[in-house]
Length: 108
Image 1 (cartoon, rainbow, N blue to C red):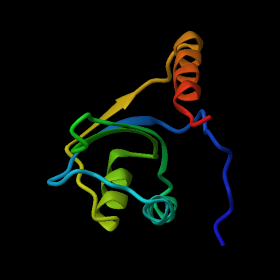
Image 2 (cartoon, rainbow, N blue to C red):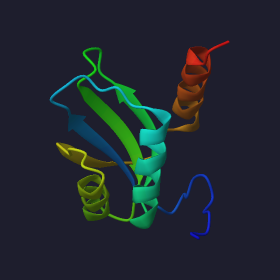
Image 3 (tube, one colour):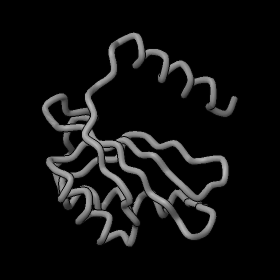
Image 4 (cartoon, helix red, strand yellow):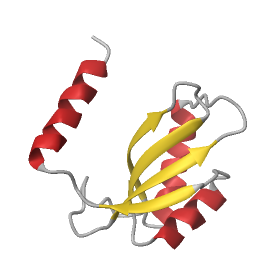
């Protein structure tokens, strides 16, 4: 069994991944669990995603050792990868805004 790492690893690079899907995306909890297991095997961790209004593009934030690790995990999960951009962490002010926004979206 794989050892659980901390929720966020400040030493791990961050990447934004853009994906385009042929059909509207409809993801189940089981899909997420399977993808997380595949990602873990490549030392890749999904952190957060945005879905476009047409439900055909995602913009996902990942921790990963390299773009190649992301591509390999995506290949194994049969997920497209259009673009991978290394990004830096937001300032604390922006991180708080994202947290506030995410909290406002949670079901009551």
